[in-house]
Image (cartoon, rainbow, N blue to C red; front, side):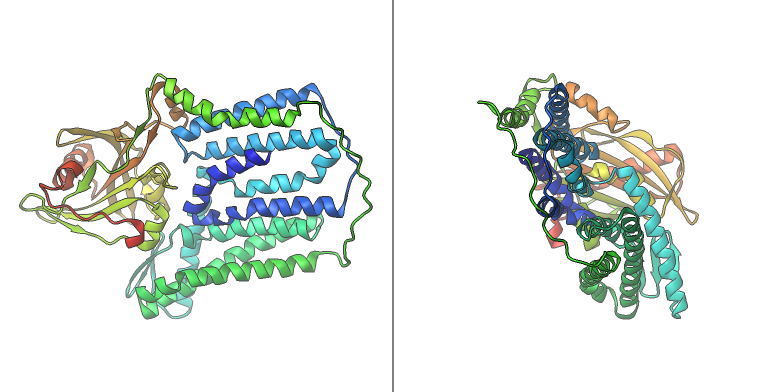
Length: 507
């Protein structure tokens, strides 16, 4: 069980690292172990081991589910379904092991530590995006109202607070989703630690959620005031410091609140009345289960070696780059990316440029590359997700569109968004494993890659932003023109001057 949970946590670790709202995931397994040991030490129980045919069927189901999760992880490691499948398989295996070792009494005793591990499993993207988007709008509105109440003129454009010295974007980090998820984990922990009744635990969760939102509102307001009064440098200098202060204040408040709700008195260890655990046969089933699960990574690799899609295709460097030497009448200027956005995207190499053409034509182009060990994926940062999170509204459905540059085709999707009467057209194309792969209709469609396509590693994304509603023909012409002016093959960088790629740490 520990080996399966260890492998599951190892696959979850890149998500914990890449997403700030899941940084607390590193502590969750250790907290769950602490709660399990504490529960057994304080209240020993009489064990009633169970061995039935149901165990065999359950073990087979857990093994098959874990094998599926490992196969899909190697195809699409950023799909949240993979994390859920692995966690469910590990939880099912643990529950079966507890039943076999101590029966229903042991499973009931350790049910909460087992369930607590799920706080480290990322939410489904649709749920998380919906909660984050609503929180960003709420925080932006309240922050602007607070600025007005304190005599500071500010305007709201979606999730952007316009100040006299510039704009401040209320991004995902400032939405409060990190405080909310971390606070929820802490409330569940303190509720169990203080042995609260279920009604008091619900009260603690409700109060903790309100405190998380309130502390985040205060932090956001202070950051915007710093940006307004002292400028951008002061804003970034105190961004993380205020974040740490917010987290500390939330945890101290929850500890005090949990202690206030707890019953007085000190719990003492009870008399040990546990029954001895029967010894297994000459070949313990635990070793067989360990061997079966240990074989899963090897079976997954064998599958991809023998699958119709052929051997794995790995992209270790970007195939394309953005040039700063376009044709006469055009200019390309590099744009420094917000350090917080760069941290969130967690790309290996990235470029963001502004393109100016004849007349007043302008466009923005971004180019990012993720190596195989990156914790983020452009599949989680499509224009549909990022533009709507920034306060833009969809103006129609996305449509398939293929652009052409040089000797290559770029299949992708074209989107149209609107905000305050302003329309922007966005096109995104993605290379997976070095191949220009047409975008999948849905995440479920990617399941077919297990049978039809090779395993790919390394992702490259190119996104074009063109202002204005030009119509379908105009969109294609404008996007095609921009792509032809700024895109250059990495193999030809010696012949053309290119904008330097910058890792995250240098932005």
